[in-house]
Length: 132
Image 1: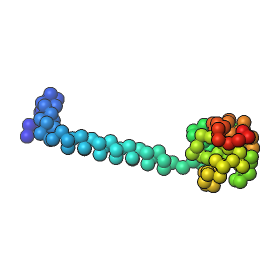
Image 2: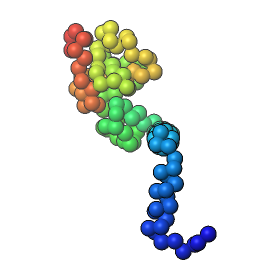
Image 3: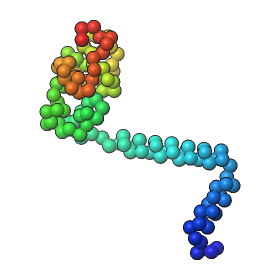
Image 4: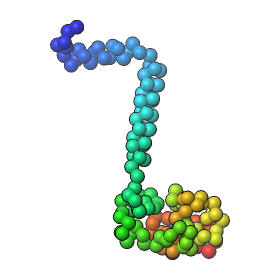
């Protein structure tokens, strides 16, 4: 084998090899590689856990704030208390007496002492909840 190939010669050899592979096989191979890479990056991004004592809250608006930060704890209450509730995964907040609040899993509930605290955390009023 000649080890002194020019870049142009290597490129032509690669083109010839790729041309000999059926196009459908190349498309499937690219899809598998892309989906595997996406899954791997997503897994790596999700494997980093937040600091102990920090509740990232809703989205990234509070992410990275320390447990003593006033922005991280403003308006949030302990588990099961507060007049307003929202889902960690949602965008709306409810009165605790609304039926929409009852549909939120206990593990996903985030409580607030006021509507302004919920809005400051990035949530908006639920249109289905009477009294908001």
